[in-house]
Image (cartoon, rainbow, N blue to C red; front, side):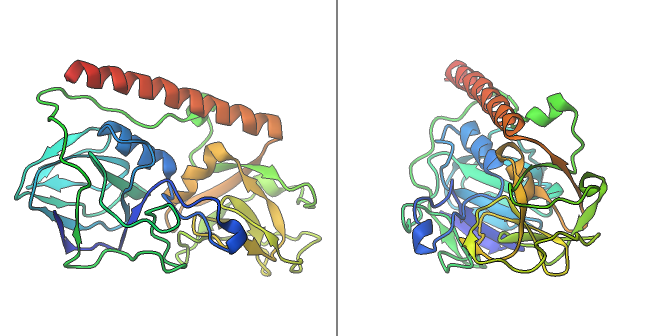
Length: 314
């Protein structure tokens, strides 16, 4: 049993997401940084999309009435287990009676806390993901209790290993604030688009990131007839500022569409904080597909290495 002593700013249960229901107006939800969720789960031997805790900016304080094997991934929350520092990217044992504090996310907006076996959570439409806008689940509150799905596996003993999610951007040397965009076929793009810079607005959420900065003057500045939209879409608000749709985005929208953040960069949306700078880099379909293949190859290498380490530890 896990008891919530302090809930943090917005701590929710998230898994890989809720798919196949967009025709009913039900969005995706799921982890805002799916790669960080995947890594946290892999570190404790879970399937990649297993339900875990998503911690946003200010984290919770959790008390454990039973032992667990856990891992953190994503932004570093400055975690303290019974007062001792715990870093992301490495599995760690939690003994019964322990207290885990996750004060504040650093160098990113979200951290993921996974437990071996996952969390025992009721699924809605095939997913345990919290979707605050749709009313599926809720942000953790003081006094909430969470159950672990299965007993933890044998501890890893003195074996110590560490991992971070792969990223093809490192190979390309792209700056952290650059998002690669696949332009919409019907969008009239400003000539200076890639030279412009915006800052993430404090009103941003899992539904969308609002960007403050230069107003974009495009021919389709007026609202269009509503059409399907999805996470990663870049819309232009009536004031000319971009809106980056997140995992809790609506399923249809009427604002003009600039393009879509490529799949290989989409997890970065979940780690952008208020005040962070954002610039766009336009790419074509071939470059977007190549980036995705590169990223998946990196995941394959990492999963193979983790499986070998786990076999050696056992």
